[in-house]
Amino acid sequence: MRTEQMLKPGYVLVGGKRTYVIEKILGSGGFGITYKVKSRVQLDNILTDVSFAVKEFFPDSCWRGSDSTTLIAPPTKQQEVGNGIKDFVNEALRLQRACHLNSNIVNVNEVFRANGTAYYVLEYLEGGDLRKMVRDNGGNGVSEQQMLNVMLPIGRALQCLHDNSMLHLDIKPDNIVMRRNSSGDDNEPVLIDFGLATHFDKKGAPTTNTPTSGISSGYSPMEQYAQIKRFDPRLDVYAFSATCLYLLTGKDPDEAMYLPPNYVRDVIPSGVSEEVICAIERGMSMRRDERVASMKEMLDMLGNENPPEIQDQILVQPYQQQSAYLPDNVYTQLDNRPRRLQQPTASKSSKKSTLKVVFLSLAIALGLIAISSLVFWAINDKPKKEVVKKRSKSNPKPQSDGPTGDYEEDAMAICDRFIYLAYRVKSQDDINDLSDEMSEMLQEYENYYQEKGEYQEFGKAFDNLDDDIKTKMEKAKKYVSEKESEFSQ
Ligand SMILES: Nc1ncnc2c1ncn2[C@@H]1O[C@H](COP(=O)(O)OP(=O)(O)O)[C@@H](O)[C@H]1O
Ligand SMILES: [Mg+2]
View: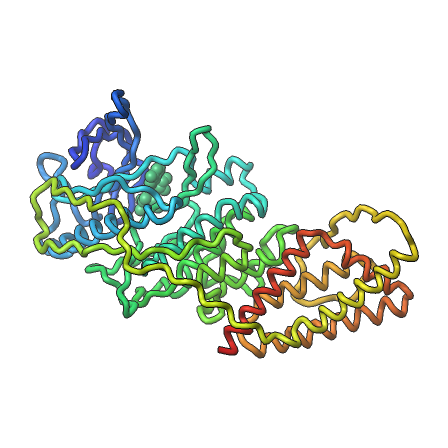
């Protein structure tokens, strides 16, 4: 975008609710310009200046008229630009409703027409984007917990968009910005930039007049390099996973089409849990049919403990105006309250799991071990020693190397392997394979420790596993049970 096309600092933009004074340019892309603005706002009996962000629809092909403000489209593009304005307004109105359903979606204040184009006004977010978060960390990746603190709320926001037939299509570190709370901490991630966001109809076809296309290297999946014709949450799942990876490594992922096998496992720092590695690995599968299918599944794999309530649907009447040149200042804000299309329905009572074999071997082994360790503790009435959580230095490998002679490490390896396989279950055959492999693995380890005469110590290591890994095992088991009931339907 040429800088001479941007509104200059000091320019007064007249909106529907108030006027805005341009302070500076925050960014510009092929379709628009984002400004930081100030506006005088009355809070009770006090007038105060408040910052906002304003987005202006201004495609690359256009320029300003002699007044240096009005948008002029080339004669051959007038229809296209007119349609673009309508789409921009519709997306803004949809976003205005979406932000009421989820607090991690940027708040839209008003949408209005001026200068022959359209604008919408957003809350101004002070905290900086995820690139700043990494910069503030010395350019290094952040911890797994910090990554989850940011990405779980963003995942829930995305799920809310998907539930309302929208795809964001531009999830990346630049488009997640922190909102400061009243105490000044940067503690709430917010999803911004709905420039590529697309709404789809019931049949899964885009409802926009001008299907937007765009990619961000490292974050867009391969299929986004072609035009998007169908609603598919896996497009956002890929970009979401790539953003999780960015936060953990501090580096942009390689471009989707050049990802070597085992890429995620190779670049991810040691110490990251197996569930998170699995989730990102499967979220960034090059092939769509191997990718995590939905944000719900992705969040489950990442250990989401705060599933969203069943969401209302967003209903927006499409912006019907046919003319590309509406009178300026048409105030288009709709009623702020989301309208209900659908009453929440009680969740289907989960079908009783028919899972028999999968956990049998593990349960028997752990059961035997637990019993034998009880006997062991009855004989040796000693206080339990503190067990230091052990993790192998590198990330757990997809294949086991066999018993090491270190009970704690081996017990952990068995659990890690189980978790790794659990989140890869995509069919009943996978469940059967998982069951076979776990039985074999347990047998091998049991034989080894029996021969060494250290079977009970090995059992004790399971008892003493960290609560954290026990919870993760429970979650992985639950995940496989749910999958099994799904396959048996
Ligand atoms: N509401 C906002 N508060 C603070 N900064 C914002 C806000 N919206 C956008 N920005 C900043 O402006 C940049 C450009 O805006 P964005 O909506 O991402 O448009 P684009 O990437 O298409 O130019 C963002 O990367 C961000 O740094
Ligand atoms: Mg952006």
